[in-house]
Image (cartoon, rainbow over all chains, first blue to last red; front, top):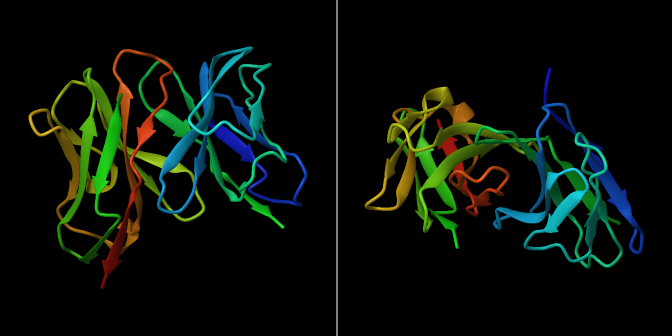
Length: 111
Length: 115
């Protein structure tokens, strides 16, 4: 079955550590996106990539980094520079049709 | 710039009652509009989408939405609420005819359904 896989589902990070969230898709989509979700704030765009080896900052990119070395993969690194990383992170991909497909999310908690 | 406003962060209905979740958008070009549903600790699932075809769009689970350009609205309705409809709902807008452009989301509306 085609879809988007995010891992892990739950992630705990100590302050000062970098952590990487995985996002893999087998839908053959060119565009991939990372969103952050906080209660009452909806989804905010962190980074997006429309093609391999290219990506752009979204609205809240500070403290995050990404790479797009393969079409199928778009990992997100939450660095120690992100002051409030505890949130629910969602990865999405878009094909040539119009809607986005989402993964099941990763809940990151700083301990 | 495009934006989405969802009126009411929380809506409560009784089982069997009409569900109405409000969404207004702002866009300088013809928009593509979407409604997504999210259950706790899960990703978003597409309910329905408007892509400049019929203005009344039918989706999954008995939901539908009507695109009204004059009112810049895309409200979500369901004639009879079911307990399983309790979830968070997001309205989103995407610029038409531009592949790869990110969705812009509203802040969401939590729907509660009581028996």
